[in-house]
Length: 290
Image (cartoon, rainbow, N blue to C red; front, side, top):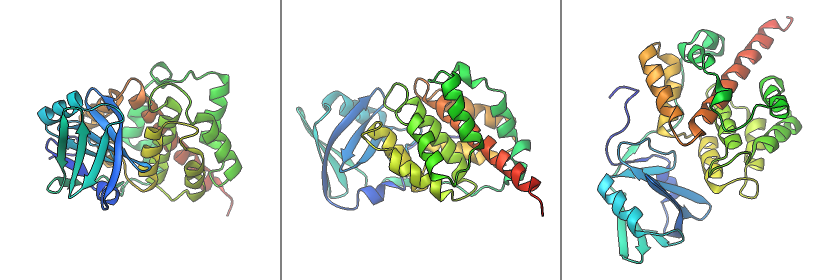
């Protein structure tokens, strides 16, 4: 399977066993056309359809099984995790989703051969440079937002106060179950984590992205990312930093951009800003006197 092809079989993220190792009780948190979220304690499990991108905290099942689940359960319905299966209790009876034999897909962030110094010359970065993101993202890039974009690009990631200010502005900003501001932060952080620890930024993100400031879905994606995991389409995206094949880059970026209403474009914009920040940081280091 090439790095631009989706996992088209029943499977689950290798992050999920950490969530499902103990008996637990939860409920249906949210439903969509192609999947649903189950909340267990403070974590989410996304149940999606085979052939769609596997979520960082997700599992994908056959289309007919998923259709039956979506037609049967309602938000708030009880879910019990025991005996290597999720038991969904609906008004039509119990539905079992067995995950014991599901293939685990590695969604941990990969190591990249591309260095920060090579980023400006990578085909992926140059392709992202051609996208006029302001036409497609869910936030207006007005003067105020532009100020915080500039802070993202040029301020010191070791400055906790500035990091907190930036994250506080973007957190929960915009519409949807994953607001645009959160998606921008996810994309930005994804880029940073490929090339360094950035512990102060990560600490600020963990402190500021909470359910009292944004949605539980955003918190779940941030938590997974800070643990070193990302959804399948983003794993395929970052691998393209080492892939000079233009058609593969174009195909994957278009798939990411089609995700959600503006979510894919928002995250790509954040990822582009993260790469640009890294390039700027590399230039500054090169320009430092001996």
